[in-house]
Length: 395
Ligand SMILES: [Zn+2]
Image 1 (cartoon, protein in one colour):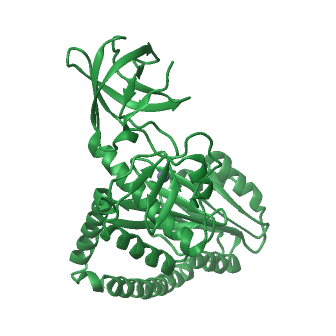
Image 2 (image 1 turned 180 degrees about the vertical axis):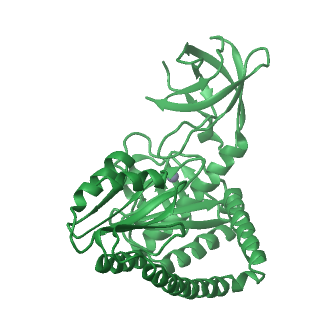
Image 3 (image 1 turned 30 degrees about the horizontal axis):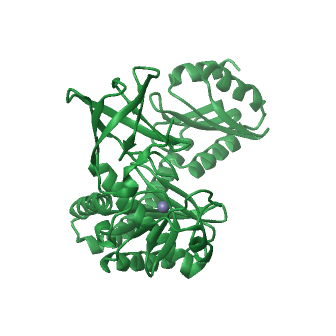
């Protein structure tokens, strides 16, 4: 079969086209594989997800195209209904989806071009899906670098530069310096953004940089000795900023402060929270002291059950205080029957083997925990505490 004519290389803005159905084969689950003589549907390749849209059959019925792929120059459209071989059809790509991909991809070239010229890093990974745009670079970047790069990339957008897509001859290519992810064979397509980037690339691009709208870096993290940067462009970037702005507005409303003072308010709240926690623990400690004093010193195997979320240190202190005064097992369970319990158990004066107790908690009540011969700790999911205590009473 002859290679599919790739209309997106002739004009990246072709969203509607006529074509002839060369073949249609049934796949699994009600899908069909359709090959046309020419198409504007850009197939999944080079890290970019494929175009989607519809093909209208000879009767004008719209058939969904859910995916497009390319192999040996032949492009296959995955559809949800068959098309008759030899008939003329009209393809219509989802232009909103495609234009967004063009905005993201050209934005990526600008960003990667600047990273390359300023830091000498290569773009060693690229992923453009409907939910994210990520680039992996071969060296590290810090927060200041990222901010400066973001401003420069946006400057390239404001400059409204023409994006040039060409297929240079072998001789021209040999003389050209361009970014490329792998050694390319066959016709190499070069995408040039004068002053910012020259890169081998197979994807459709916007015709001028201003069409990108703007570019926002949404995150970056160390990745395989380099850095992974996530960006958004155009409408997607605007949507992201709008969502973040809504969240910030909601938080400042609830803290009754202005957006620029939100961080101060949060810091103050955290400090107050820390202070209150300290006071709460102090009060709990005092209360426990009275409680412990009230327990008959002659009792052994003493288990306290507290329904408040008790601080781990306070639990340990309490267990030690109990073990100093009582024989047998001395333990504290903190939690509720519904949410489960944290526990710490030690052995009192005359000593009892803790492993037996830990085994019962694990085997009968699904507890998770560890410890040593002097003290064990762990947690149990939802249980009836009365049953747990009655089992432990048998030991
Ligand atoms: Zn590219």
